[in-house]
Length: 78
Image (cartoon, rainbow, N blue to C red; front, side, top):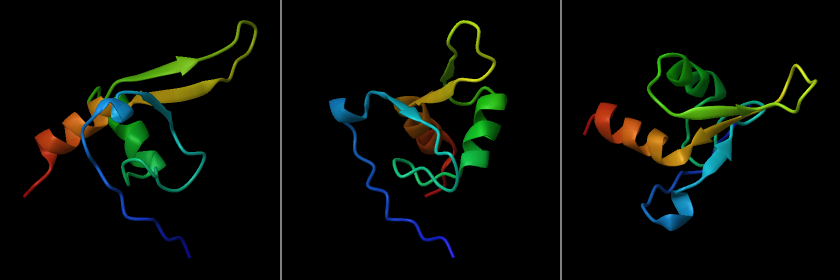
């Protein structure tokens, strides 16, 4: 059983940052699932970057948090 904490979304400088996609489950910053975040990245709806060290084939995927909030504002229903 997975539970998530309520997500408090507020604007401000503390939210203008890159966040790491969770290794599993839901993002604590946005409440979106890992698979949903990757789907949004693939569709070009949110901004992301991959950091890979030279010589490595794997790295870490980061998401620009303001782009996720902008997506929620654009696509969300009231």
